[in-house]
Length: 310
Image 1 (cartoon, rainbow, N blue to C red):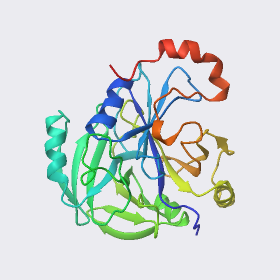
Image 2: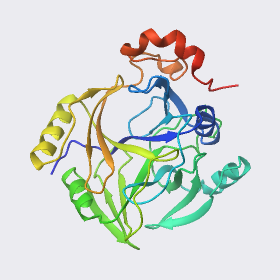
Image 3: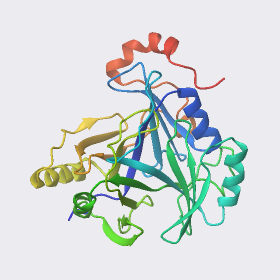
């Protein structure tokens, strides 16, 4: 069993409209935009990162807004719900705030004894806020949400799978432990993780496979401290029979990718070098940052990328 993985690093999804996406996460949810850059493989498409003050691993929601993307078709083999941690007793505040903001799909829930508020993103994304006692992670305090109510980072992701057994074994190999099972949902967690410690597996018999579209999660990334530990994880996965990519430089972290038995794309990302490598912490997410191979496209991109504000 591995011990290098410390919980979630980031979750990357797809959207249709960049301005609407930016408004939802920075204004309605009160997260900080910590990076405004572009897709490595499609530089005419933004890659937007939202999180806490520094873009701490375990708090980072990222998006590729493709203007011509089709709608998501939910199903099995995908991340169903991305859940954020909020302080205990704050769900009434969030219910009122999101309702006033016209957010759809609001529903009070309980899972594993935790109070949750489900809601939809602008592209039909499935989210939840989960009340957590004693989550000591510091929130972004300048997003229009009082610090006592603000999102702390991720709580969990839920995987919707036809057969969760093989993926559960993979997660156990990655250092997760089963902590509970209720109503057909298996909960696993990393002991002494980074706060974004939980993965739920929902087993759904039958049904169609999910089709990627606006509102779909593209991949889930797990955090390791540095490149040395990432290489240890990569070797262990290769030795176990997984097809793992070489290490890829993503400017703000190094990444490796592999496909899980249930069909979900996993990434393992380093905490280094971080989002302040090319911007002062006080000004994260303000300027358009480009990968060096796309630097020559700046005049074109600054004219053609959709303005995020205004």
